[in-house]
Image 1: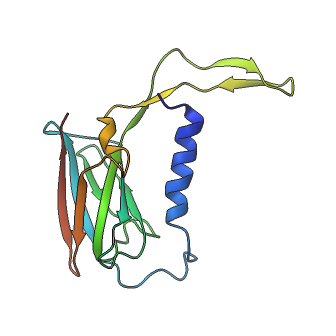
Image 2: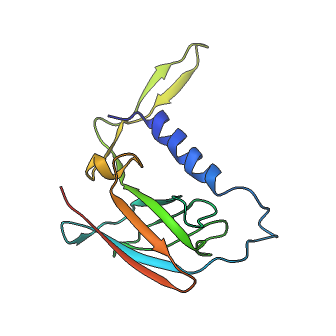
Length: 152
């Protein structure tokens, strides 16, 4: 099980992959990539999808988040700006809080703080890590449509 802290750090790491140019500069050479994520045929809402360069020209990581219909549009720097052509390994995860509601606890400085709820990935864990996810995609110099149907 992941702690809330580990999840936040993972999110920061993914976001740091997208940083590199100021928003005013933008990036050239990106192509639209849209798709759908399903789990056993059912659309997955609020999943995080990350594209990791895997040789073949891919220049940097990209990512996205699914809507209620399981649809996403890839983002490299600006929202839904697309992705560089190339080969990518893909990870997908959906974290949800569980357990009792947060409670107030005293930290090391004697201050009362809210203790967060633990989170868990509700999708099969094999899709969460680059090392175990078998998901791949090749982005060409045109609009790419992909479907990831996750199974147990």
